[in-house]
Length: 149
Image (cartoon, rainbow, N blue to C red):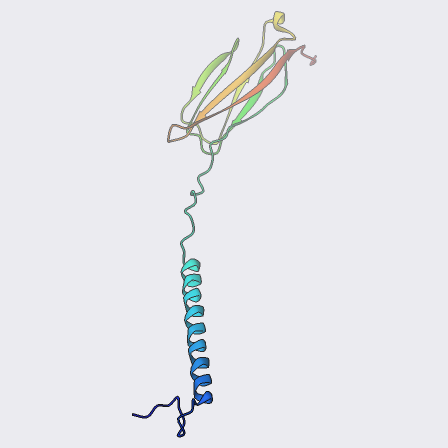
């Protein structure tokens, strides 16, 4: 068998040795780069973390005056996009349950007791969604003198 690392005189053939070393280094570099490439490929294929679905949050708003004239109906609008039921209360005036609740509803107060002029009251609304979650809002108003003739 012929030894390719030695020439005919038995001396080490440096050209062959350099070529083998270069080929081995090239092969090792390719293996390392391929390994890192596979790692990067697997990382890019990783599934993103699951995110919560876009479920609308249960929120309630109250739109109405901050001053309510004596002997006059004053209206308050209750707004909620996802509520199916609402409860409201105004201590000293009343309370009620709105079932089913559909996007918006109106309630009114009509203060008739002149001794309550200047008093402040708070409308409290609690809404519920189909899953039983709840949200609440408050709206403060004051009874004032009726300015209409």
